[in-house]
Image 1: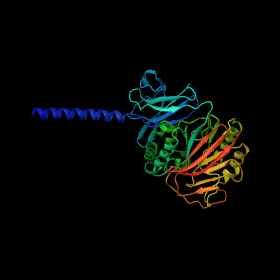
Image 2: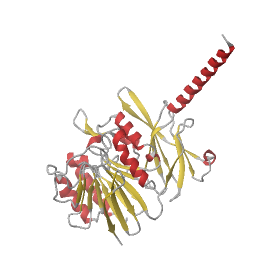
Image 3: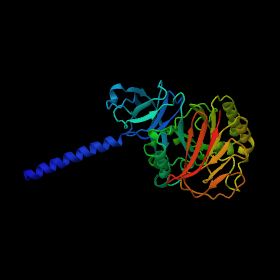
Image 4: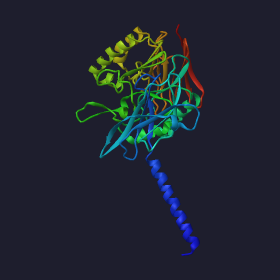
Length: 397
């Protein structure tokens, strides 16, 4: 063989081998990285991710952000836990780790992996003792997650990149336990939830019935979202409350309320205790099904008759909802609570009820930004071109 072609062949072989090595390295890196809270947002941060390459270790590294590239030198390693999601004939490994003993109001850099294969370094910020902050609220994502819903969450991040968390009001996907849809949901959000924690509540599309007719929550939920375990026994994966500075956010599982009378009673009693014990200035309810619907043929009686009086008794400020694939706001002639429902994904319904709505629209994808100061709450709803659609404010001494 001509010596020239021999060198070319050897060089090409080396390039291919190096390319395969890099490809294998990428294939082993963590994916679907998700920030949530399972404990106090001022001094903890939980991270979940899907493990690649069959590894049996879940490790997180964390260091206070000093803008120095030598992150590894000062990083502290924290061992996490592994769990497995069964999908047909295979089991997908997931890792979870909670960083503890953090400083309030501080930016940290972190990464996750197995000790050899690591994610990129990302950042998060712990809650402060006080101070102004904002968060994002998104209604149903559900369909066309990668191609169309992605515009909503990315536009919201573009506008409010310093938001402290993102509330998802149920129906994050369309078909329960469809891994491909969760893959699209993560891809649609991109790196956003690697830096901004999610505060999710499930909708009806996160549920299915098993062979005995029992309602079963999508098993992806627990491995992806490491949430506070302060809800009623057996419902902690979706029923919980979270205190962030001067706000208490209460997540209710409205699918169980609507379809399981026992579960409804349990949540009703639990919620009243949680609201009665709250010392926070602002109290916000998050659930999927609306207390008041935008459709004449929908009437969620149990929410209106049993839960609404408790909201009013304890001065709930906002009730953030989804399910009806329209936008609506109303307070029924009272100052609070303000009932809101919105839609971030492309699936749309018509709005044919005007019995309670002060502001409404349909066929419109929206995102919401909620800002809190010492004595005021500012609510703004935006179209995906950034145009302000609706806004109001609440005051509290």
